[in-house]
Length: 220
Image 1 (cartoon, rainbow, N blue to C red):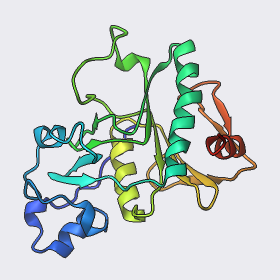
Image 2: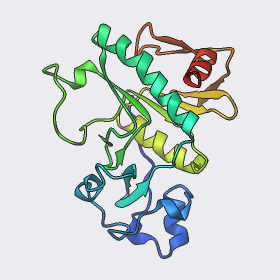
Image 3: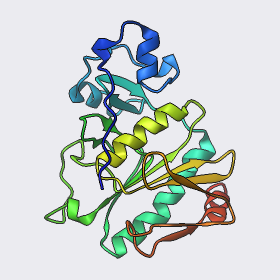
């Protein structure tokens, strides 16, 4: 079931930079792009960064640079895609996207989950549209936390994901070797390297040992 996104003040209502930063989740200032001016950014502005060295999201009319993952953390995303995508394709369950895949949220923000999965019914003719932004949210969103991600920022993301039809969020904290599994914005269970991740009803039959994931991602 979709979860309502808490109404937040528009950027226009922010009287100073401190209020803007708070609205965006208390993220570091250097991640807030100033061109175009905060509150005026559009999807077209977002797409102008395609092919650049920045991964940017559209949040409340503001272009926000995603927090850069450490090298090994980026390999966690790569490994997950390597094991998840073949399973999804073999069983014709849907599509798996990487961290540069734009997905439109119900409140018109555009997010880029580090790994996203969308069920097959979101592609009625069995083909992926060539529109640059998917007009739906993920059914599974995977976020691998970077050093600049804040709890409030991640809460805001989860609220948008669940309001946009997401049913499962995995938040990976690699330094602590844990994965928090969310079925709604606030409630979660914490899994360790002794546990196995399950795709549950979202990706039936898919399982992944967290220990294997963490170990194999760093193996060359």
